[in-house]
Length: 429
Image (tube, rainbow, N blue to C red; front, side):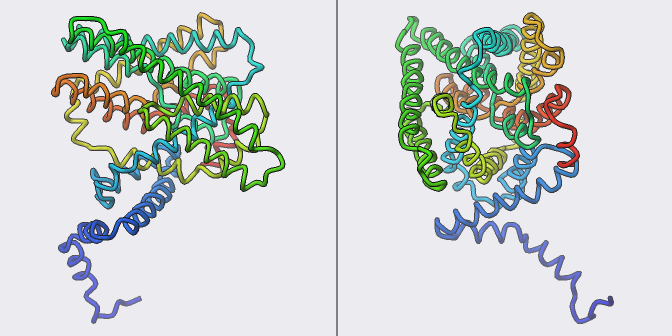
């Protein structure tokens, strides 16, 4: 079809480029009132996630990687379509998403599990998490000659594994079997180990600075985490009492979300991760009621929240941070992976666990985000300004890379371990 000569379409394109149309859109969004900004920003977040995952689906990347890429594209490091002042106030989305994830993980802690299996889970978790932390600490001390306090705190943070992207990948490909059950329980216990080790390292750092040992710095965080575990237990009892089979479909979902919001609110007030409390809540509720329908309801309700969580994680990415982290950040990224893999492989080998699980468990333990970033922020405040910034930048930059690559390695591990039906891969291709 011949274009009308009266429309100088080429000049129109050049004019849009000269006007810097992206800055024009950005300024419009930035000048809007708060409710309008929130609504339009969330529309952009969800739409960007949808379109980018269309592309990542073609190259067979998990959705989580697509969501994070979408966040990088529309965030300050990309097109800057979302205002920075809006991004820094989105912590509530992360808290809600982590609460949903942890509650769903609780159902994998079935009361019928024998003591031997529980011992195996604890042993594998201790081996892979502590070995990663130890290798990171030693490398910082003896290779990079960093201060003792910096090395201890970075090593403690290295023990953590983020369950969010792994769970999303498992759900996307409908992963099932002993490998999946074992993986989910290990990632859950990882956070328990990380919080405990970090509390001890904080006490050591404080003792080093004050030339004395302060037992309060250990007891306080452990006591707070014990308290929220009790909170999760009693919340589950309340859920059991109120969410009965007589309740309507809508009311059951409303009550469940309300209880999770309550736990998250209390944890947020005391600056404690909601992961453990919500996990206990889910485990106690499931074991006492065997109510699978509620968990299915929650899973059908959560996709917009989960996609927003990962897109926002990508939006927080600052490409300059990777440069700032430098060679120390690269070393942390690689050494932690090595520690996780060797620890998982060796412990599974010692327990004579199935070869497919032994060879692939370490690949699925790569992701690191929420808890690690929160602890890095605390570590930043404990250390001198320069070292604190280095530690925070290392964790933030590596977390984004872990979250990008983690779902891919988790998918590979699930395929090699036989946890994904080949038919599911064909459907997703």
